[in-house]
Length: 167
Image (tube, rainbow, N blue to C red; front, side, top):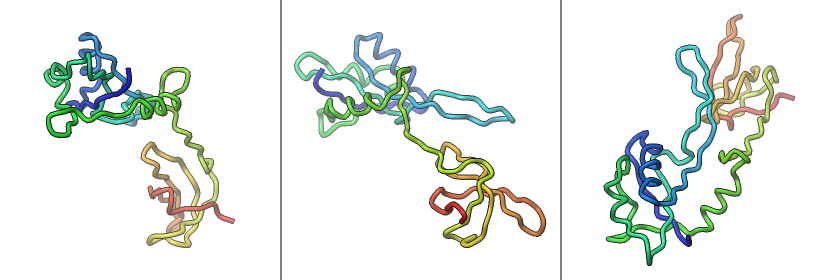
């Protein structure tokens, strides 16, 4: 398999499209990542696509007929240049696969720069030069910080680039 074409799926239909494409005999690659979902006071670990609404489909220009992909359940359309599907080189997929862990999940080398309770200082924005306490880092790379304002602890969420370790 030398190249890959990219299918754009209907919203939240990546897994359905993947199953139908595999049933038709296509090789499908959909990198997944483990994330946390918070809902109704519950925290769950769920698998989500690394590229929401996109699938990579193995493609050999000589033997693969790509038109049936367009009418597959869950697939909206193929990314195309004119009448031909756009092709992603095999090395792109190989580099993605090299970043997967032993369970086939995409590994994000996400080192937490702070631990809960670490003192921080705001470096920009309306809270610049104020001090706070690090609470947690969420999936969107935003941090929750506790501030003491008028004798009360108040939690605020800011971008990671807006804080630094207090000295």
